[in-house]
Length: 280
Ligand SMILES: [Zn+2]
Image (cartoon, rainbow, N blue to C red; front, side, top):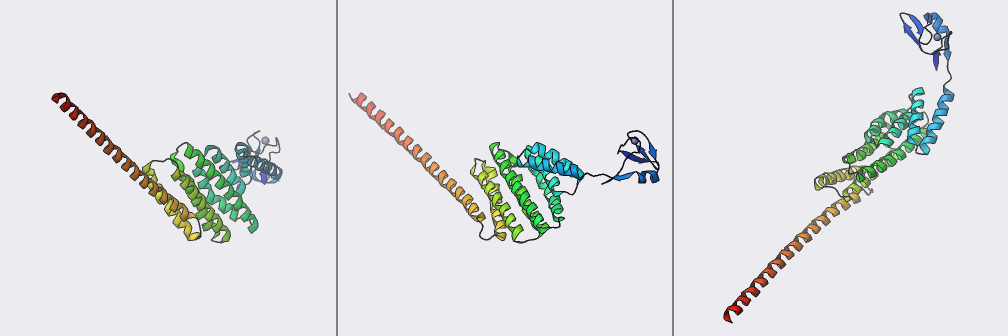
């Protein structure tokens, strides 16, 4: 990295004003020719390496506060570093369960990964982010089910969008398809989990449609997938509910019938008793 360093004070903050460079630290002024001579190459690689080392260490320990701090440093020094671009956003999102910020960074991160020359490196990077995206999806989902949070649908949205973007950026091949299928599988598992938790009926029918829609999309990529099984399970659940409702109705009807019979017997008893009193 090239930078102009002030001869007088060693300051690096020089701004060009009215055709001359002015040091913001000591006020010295330099002509363009002089400034050119003062241009030095600054070695930032050690700083970058250290920051990356610390960032990875923090990420491995799931210390996302520290990870975000160090990845942001890496990102400043090396703006096209896919790892820093992804994990600075990811770490921050992990702490606040901000699903949409992860979803929004996926495309640009995949584009950065595409710039890596080595195909093996590309695939390693994709594997790594997909593992973390899946981990994040499960974590945020459990939190939102517990809190009955209505952002529940943004997690499946993030997953399917990741799968789709991956295919659109890297094309359809065995590797990308297998990750895309995983995206759908996890999406369906999460939706099914939600479907089996206690949710209100209004939300439930929309959810069932969503499960069916994802199951059918998934079938396109993987005809043997268990997506449809999950859909079938959802359908079965609904059927069971209908059967339950029928039994409930029947029980209520029986109860009412018994109630009427008891009333009838009481009436007959009182009637007979009255006749007995009158006749005696
Ligand atoms: Zn200076």
